Length: 316
Image 1 (tube, helix red, strand yellow):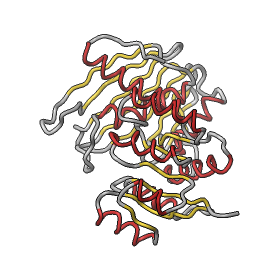
Image 2 (spheres, helix red, strand yellow; image 1 turned 120 degrees about the vertical axis):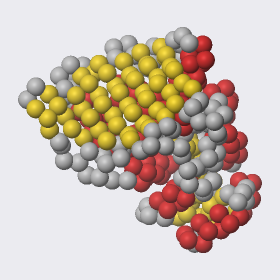
Image 3 (cartoon, one colour; image 1 turned 90 degrees about the horizontal axis):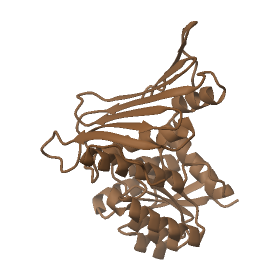
Image 4 (tube, helix red, strand yellow; image 1 turned 90 degrees about the vertical axis):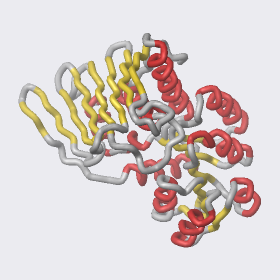
C-alpha cells in the first residue's frame, strides 16, 4: 500500500510538533510544510527532508497531498481548510475549528457538499488520563456523574495568540465536558476579563455549564505563575482526579484512594495516528466537525454571557 502523503500548514510553535509526529508514524510520508515565514519553514523542511512552500496554493500546485494538518493562527483556520477541502484533501484543523461560529457553519456546508474527511484537533481527548476516566464513567465506577471541574492555568504564553483565553484554553474543557458527560449543554454562565494590559481579549475566565443531569465548571487563565492542568470528575459513588500533564489518575471512594497504573503516552501521537486511520478507513475516530462547532458555540456563549452578565442558552 502506498504511503499516505501528509502536509502541515503552519509550522510555528505547535505545527512543528505535527511535522515531527508524522515522520514517526508508519505508513505516512511528510511531503511538505507550509508557512509564510521562509526561515521557519525551511528549518523544519530541512530537519525532516520534505518540501517547503509559502502558501497552500503553491503546495497544491506542486505536490499530491492526501491529507493535511492546519496549524495556522486561528483567524486563518477557515480560509486554509476551505482551500484544502476544495481539492479533496482530508484535514485536521487545530482548535478552535474556525475563528467564529458563523464561519464554521459556512465551512461545514462545504464539507458536506465535498464529502471530505475533516477532524478537529482536541488533543485532550487522547490524553491517556482522560481516556481512563472516560472508561471509569462508562463502567459505572463513579456512579452518576454530578460534577466536572477543570483548571487550566499558566502564565502569559510564549506564542502569540489571536484569540482570548476562552477560545484558546477553555475550549479544550468545554469539549471535554461534553465528551465525558455524554450530553449537550443546557445553559452557560461566565465571568471573564482582561488583567494584562498587553491583551486585547480576555486573559481569565470562569465558566459554569449546566447539563441535564450534571454541572461543569471550567477555570482558565494566563495569570498564574505556574502551569497547572487538573481535571476532577465527581460522581455519586466516587471521585476521579487527573493531572493532564503527568497523566496521573486517582480514584477516591468510601474504601480509600487508589492510583491506577497507566501507560504514559504522547497525546498528539495518539491523535495523529487516529487521524491517519480516519483518512484510511473513512471512520470518524477524532473529534468531528460537529464537536468542533459545538465547542465553538459554547465558547461564544461564554463570551456573550460574560458581556451580558447573565446565563446564555447555546444555539445547539
